[in-house]
Length: 484
Image: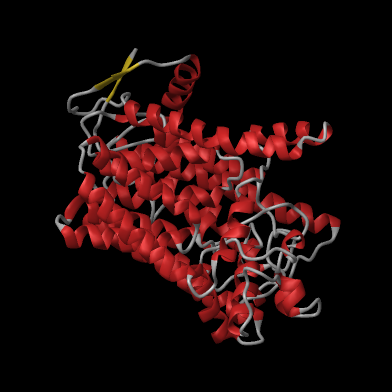
């Protein structure tokens, strides 16, 4: 067995190996995979990779490569529109050679960002204490440029813009789709990924309000709508970083995990994903639960959770994570109050659209994609003509598996840490591991929860999972399956 320090520094894979002053340890048992990982990472952690300048250089290089992809839009890895700064360089286009070039640039950028993140965290564990405000300003400068480049790695922003345009024109994006409502010749329809032109919105009504607001700014110009969405997304990302700086027990660690995390910047900001807003609501709910007591604190938590669920349904994991410690402490009244406020907030958002708005969302819960093992089960079911049975079994098993994994993660981190921070992370991390339909940008909610969890070994795995998913599912959405 080995001992894991709860020291606030948290390198992915170096926990318990650096010779630093320790607080009381948590004893855990290692399996063979953990044993191998610990030794490989220990070797890397004391290499030049943990030099702060090397780590920062790798992070910057990774982000720069991703930004070059956005600056050469349209290409195989971007939405087929050009934002203001995408006119600086000539477009790569979709020729066979340029498809390879764009992919190499983006995937290499993802790997360099991962190495840069690991190096920064290892340097932090060995005594590097950068000024978090300087990191925040540096990230803000990078993001200010990035939001004016064409979104990279996914076509989701094209779908956001199209649903917003439908709503702004008086349509219901939950009962129609971009192709049917906007028409085949609309620039909005053209921006939507190939497989999703006939898909009604799978987002919550609060997301639709945001998308409709952006579309009212963009009008007939899809690029302007996407630009407005990108600016809002970048502003929220930096806003979360500022909140973490002001409220975290270890602001340096929290800043490295979020604001200066090149992997997250690439996935959430460069991709323009709504998951940034979900993560923002998640950390607000967690911090309120930790710092505000009484009835009005519970009401505020319920409202924030309700709004988060009105963006994407996976925000319910934060609600469950916050309810977990309350139920264990038998705080029935608080749990009921928060749940009722959250349900009322969600109901008020769905009222203008009706229950039909829930149909596309629950339909999406039955899907699976590689590298999830559930996808293999789905394929086998298709061979034997048992798609419906497989979908039913899968829909029952994966939530059970998520709860089991979350329980082990919860127990593994530490039994003496606040449940309000450990339980939300345990659930969101378990969801990423076992859910049938997960992408790299979905990890934002787990990363923001992890900023509040004391040092633990989950960081290494979350880093690897995020980058692995990024390498599996990065495209402009014009040929590769993907969903928001």
